[in-house]
Length: 468
Image 1 (cartoon, rainbow, N blue to C red):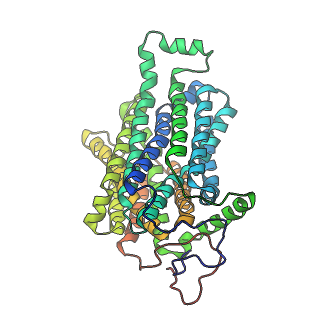
Image 2 (cartoon, one colour):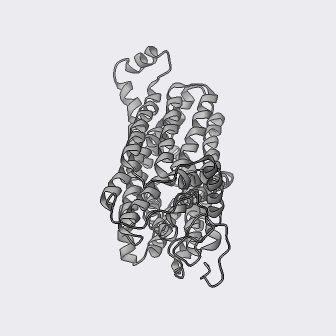
Image 3 (cartoon, one colour):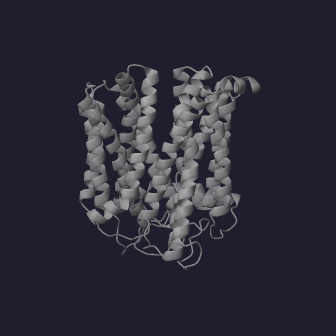
């Protein structure tokens, strides 16, 4: 944690090397931004392709809804359990290695989804995918920030690159959703194409499994791109002692982030509020879509369209994030504005429950888009504040703590929303949580040390400025 000094103190864990001072050499910020955008797009495209067909594919393989719910629980629990350990691992052995490993795990998972029909294979795939999600939650962004700081110093602009990365992620999810839903439909248009594919592979490959297998191929491209396009400064060779000793220290320091710095605590609470908002939207919207359309099948089609539109709104919000910071004159106020937009969207969704009139439907669709637009605005600005507070030795760990906060609260909020009676209450409770956290940003945090050094187990020395 920050101690009021710019350099690590004696006694800091030596197994996690500090980055070199800015030299003006290496990749320039524009090149780093383009590569970060490409990595973000390639990683999330296959995941988007699995959204439209995942449940239908498992159902076609003979799995019941209870089993499918169990599969997704395995994914969530694995991601949550691995979040901090893998974040620390990235800070020890490097961003590129961990990110490439995430791609290989996803490639294996998508292959299992596309070819296997047994419950144990799907469970294994979900566990691998959860581990990959944890591995990927920080390294790409940490690499981008490290590269920009090494070239241009810690005061270099980050918001634009982070916003473009968020837009690339949202665009990949939107395009992937369309591709994943459209490919099986296109295969069904040709006379006997789907049947031929199934017969030719002995039932291993069916039209619904094509998006997963195509996603596995995209993951191979992702891994090759990561290994060739994301250079890192030399690190000391990673030894078993360094990994075993460095990762727990990084985890312990990550867990202390929110306790010792008010700004980081607000960032983590903002991630938690994001989890509550997403849980409400993802759990409650499919049922409303089915009720509006009259059947589950047509409701699923409507939800796929809404999901795509939501991702596009998120991409637009990410693009607007730097402008929002300029208009509000600070990243803090931009996060507040984004939270306000999310609150408005959830409120519209809440007050329109129980009505299928054209006016109520229009308001609900508008609210759905506003939720994702606001999240897109708030995310890059919150992360910009986080990166200015945490140095490179713990950047991926900090991002993992942030992701962990989102996932844990999303899981709890989802359970709570499912237990509440259908109606406006779940939506309005989520809106209240988002608004309460957003209002924390109305008051700026007092200036503190610009970079928090992780990990460290030493107390704050006397004479330094404590973090509030």
